[in-house]
Length: 388
Image 1 (cartoon, rainbow, N blue to C red):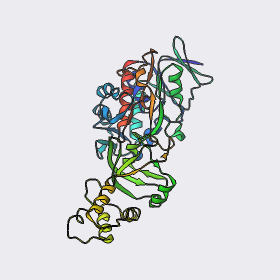
Image 2 (spheres, helix red, strand yellow):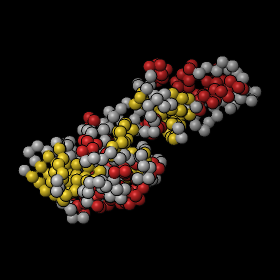
Image 3 (tube, rainbow, N blue to C red):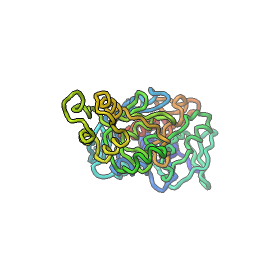
């Protein structure tokens, strides 16, 4: 059986649903095809179940892309305030945790319910558990699912990236782009924990669960937030953030005592200088177990000013080379994707293929941690929805 609509959207995630709502508002007939048995699965697990649905400070500088300017247009056309207005119309309580990050008071389900209700209001049809086998293009775009075919004048690809494959992530969106002759920037895991080599695992990973404030840096990029030691390496917000900027083989630098001169009282003073004094100073900054381990790994063998200054330097500039990351299985998002040079920054339409659009995570625009990726989903989905 063949179905017809004005707009066909592949993927009922954040970007796909936003695009559907906006297209529906413009009286377009819209069909959304979703391969899993429920819409918005990544919405539901985000923010620890509370959905960090946007960030008040979202701007192009918070995004990674081969073209750092590409996101500017969409982010300007659909702002965090625009999404907050929809949230408040639906009487969803929200709060700002830190750094502009907005979360639901109750549950991420509130955001998904809001989007589903908006879809119903404007007549969008969402078909779940519908796996697209192939897409054909003649006068129209036709998605073939087996016994059914769905045809439309406009096709919006909102299939997401490769992160969290157990939730149904596939490379289908990238394959479609290539089918239509569009370039794809090699996808890679982003916002993901680092793994360590065998030597560093022995040095640190028996401290699993220990967390401390650090500044994590790669090149000129740095983030000051918590780091968490895991069974396999380092995680926590600071590590997830810097992982998006890291390339295999690069060193990562950690300032383990941001803004604190740990041994200041021992340098150029008459204070007692010995291992006990150094340990006491370090325990004021680091968790006790990590402080003790640090001194085991980096003992201060002389109690001269020069030796203490070197110990101070090291704690503010500890370098390691990750053996890798925990990969797409644990990555919160996928960096890379459909090359932005192939798309209109205003509409998300493929320049070479009229009527074909790409939105959300499948595009080479990746946000930092803290609600930025949702804001990109809302903004890119909105822009496509205004154009289809």
